[in-house]
Length: 395
Image: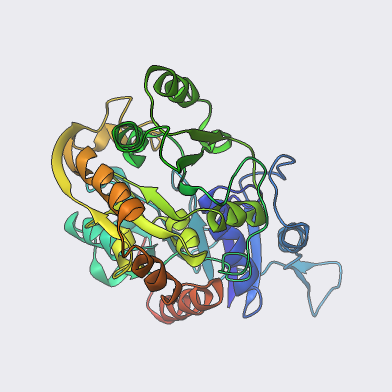
């Protein structure tokens, strides 16, 4: 197969990591070239070897000399065009023979009507990373024959249980809880900070590490909130990090921590949770969400309560997917972890006399979503789509 992949490839955003790994992995099996929606990010700490491979796929010449005249080039038409971006790229494929496959992350239970309509009209397939997201999309009315599930992967050469490298500012002898992600409302960092302030005091040997990602979502005032919290209460210390980190540096933070805490309200998959578990962190996460699918029997799941929300409220939806929100139902509901359940879970793991059983279970737990295995699943889906009849696209 000839495969074109459209998306971002050069930073460390989750979508970009997926595109990069997918392009490199599939290029070992098929003729792959990429159409980047970004340029090399000098601030991003991405493997030079992977950047080199991606540049080769970007600059790949898929034209070939004509048998009649070497000066005439015959363009190669891709069999599959993969579009993975946020918001989606809605442009038409380069040729009517090309099959269009969308990979689309989405965290909410309501699907934008615009997206649903366009997927139905001209997508030959839609790939999502979790059954949780697939159920929401099917409930919106998408043809189930177009829908496939391929989980997001992780690199076991980096995210593993080998000895940790020291990290400046992190004491491995403390009971370190780690949160990785932005402070968007759906991520639940506000819930975590409230729970932390009522759970641990400065007399506890506990510390919360917050790894923010302002490079992806822009600046925020979360540091001010942390400073106020520490100044006005006697809660245990909080270490705030907002630097660009390589995967190796991030893995070292996980390995120097006891658990990852992620009280999300809405999540499409949870790559950081998977990476942390691969490094031996006990997951303390929301229940009834996508992370259940790759951490079914490890860690502690939070109790949830239903909250009705206005999805267009600025504090709820920090990133608007193009004009799609104007075509969404304004109100929806989310499952939200209670502050008490997050507090109880952290305290339980910290104090429990048999807490080693949680760590033993994680250390004996085998994740299946290595990038090598995920690429096999992508290949199976693309082979199936390529063999199926093409969607009849009408303007």
